[in-house]
Image 1: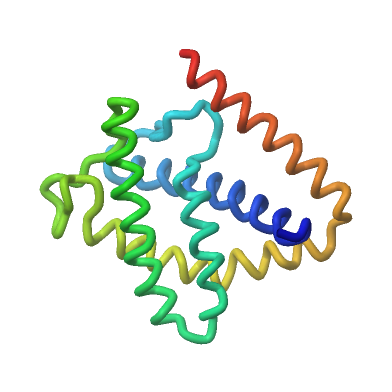
Image 2: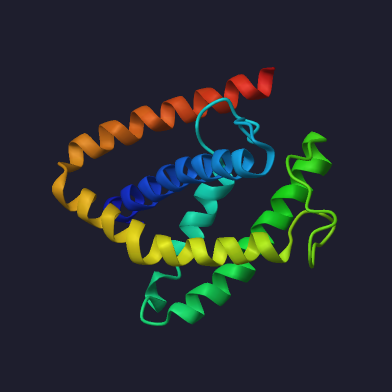
Length: 166
């Protein structure tokens, strides 16, 4: 894969991981009237959202068909959420979310509302965030972007290491 594409994917991963963290803080505050992190890492990022952001980026080729992006994202992010929840439970004995009792939930790992919100979020990413990332990447010196990504990646890997030993 060419360097320019790797830089873009890494940027999307980290930005959407941070957006996901902020989204979770807001949702938790709305429903539980308190702020706390849902992730298993210490930093202000949720990698599941980063992976979802990268998946949605690969749907960008359908940007002329918002309905197709919504439907594909609805199902793909739903599958991602289900598999992530299952892996966290089976491998790490952690259940970070539980949609039991919600409409059309599957084993409490995914439900209609969460998949719907991710479908809507995919439209926000496609038509707002990805173009902003393109603009940012075109205006900032590639060397500076690589330095920033190296720093963020180092912090991210340190976070994973610290989480795994605690």
